[in-house]
Amino acid sequence: MELAPVRGAATIEEVAARAGVSRSTVSRVVNGSTAVSPAALEAVRQAIDDLQYVPNRAARSLASRQTRAIALVIPEQTDRFFGDPFFASIVAGIGEVIGESDYIMNMLIASDDVSAKALGYLRGGSVDGAIVASHHTSDTFLERIADVVPVVYGGRPARVREEDYFVDVDNVQGGRSATAHLIARGHRRIATVSGPPDMPAGIDRLQGFRDEMAAAGLTPVAVEDGDFTERGGALAMSRILDADVRPDAFFVASDLMARGAYAALRERGIEPGRDVAVMGFDDSAVATALTPALTTVRQPSLAQGRQMASVLLDVLAGRPAAHATILPTEVVERASA
Image (cartoon, rainbow, N blue to C red; front, side, top):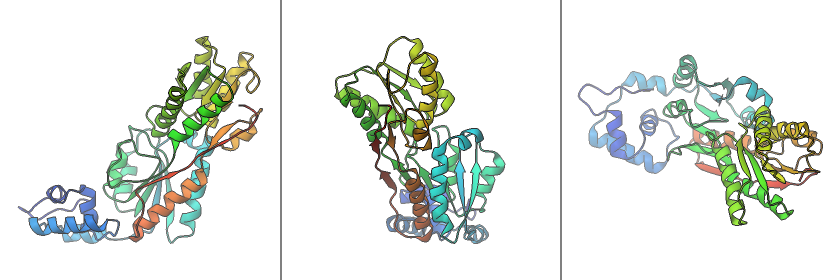
């Protein structure tokens, strides 16, 4: 909430510039929030003294009210949220931790463009903090939420700010491990169905694939974006097969895309696990439901959800919290590769 200074006094932006922190950090200090580091707290207090900044008392009183509510924000289409088992695992982990706290959780599926009503709800004092379970580089509205309440991101934000908190898995290493697994089994003509280029997870997994291929002196046969959806995986696989580049192995950057890729391969008479190797990413329920069972990279989605909630609760309570938490991944070998 914006804190209006008295006429002729310094602005909150001037205090932020003097203290070398963000506007949101100044707002939190003035509002009495404990979600500020000791160094930032001292810098802001000194800047306030130097500039004789005086916030509006009514706004400060309103902003200091606690709601004991946390928003879970999911900037995805509804069908994508309900169709991807990754989200179910993340939400389950978050729910476990929040359920044991004094907070309640409100879920907001924000689709392509969050409405003014939803943004007003998040910025208007209805929640004490927010957890963002997925995000794209175009989701600029998230920073407008983080200017008002503490936010913990699931996955590395596209533009990491000093004050941001996020919990991610090591997607680059996961991409490298998947590719190394295929190379170690003698595959050399390897293609990838990647995640969308506007999501850090998609970017990082593709980077890991490219890095491991380069380290082995290999060039990717093909790279196609599958949008982290089953249909996208099928379409991307079809584009690779249409190009007649004849890969002997595929790194598909999500299990859901791998299910679509299986279908596209079989339409061409190509049997996964027998004619070509297929590697996934997630180790979701999809991986074991496929035939042959999918070799994949396990990411600890449930643990990631728990950690995201724990970090936010620590921030809200004024306890020390890591700004960046990176969880490991591991290869789970099954029949497909």
